[in-house]
Length: 212
Image 1 (cartoon, rainbow, N blue to C red):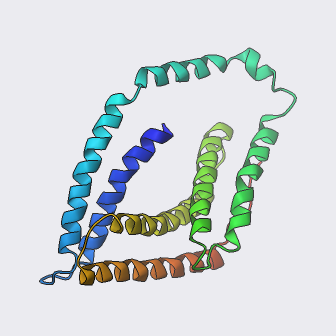
Image 2 (image 1 turned 60 degrees about the vertical axis):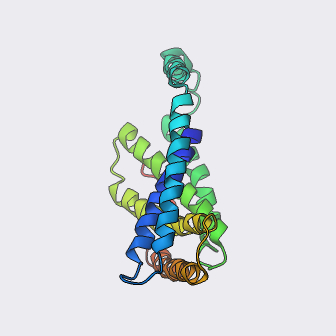
């Protein structure tokens, strides 16, 4: 599933890049026109790759795997874990998921720590998914905390988009002035997003939480 998701992600990045650069194309000026055309051509290539990936995707094997996992969730298998309570288990998992967030947050606002912000985005996403699951199982209201995690995930996701746009920019041939304009647009947006992210970290720092 992750492999298929990554395949689909390429098309999403192209679409988002096109929206970004279109919003920064000056009407009546050449800057951005060839880039949009190049991105459209990349999109056509990406669509062909996705069609092949979807055609090759073995959904029957996935269905069998899911059914086998569901079949294993029976009273006998669950009773084997009775040495640890459900709350204790969830608490342990939550701590394990929070640790990378705790380690990455300190230096994440430094401009050069792009890799740390990428890792932080993934860690926040996993922690958010965890709380969305246990909120239903334990019947707890994690709404305010989930909204905070979504806020972090959103800004970090937008910052990661800029990184992906740079990768796409490196795949196309552009006139010198148009490339300079595109790179300047990305640099300005990256700086703007970093300011927003830094303010968020200072105003709403992420701290460990787990409601009993």
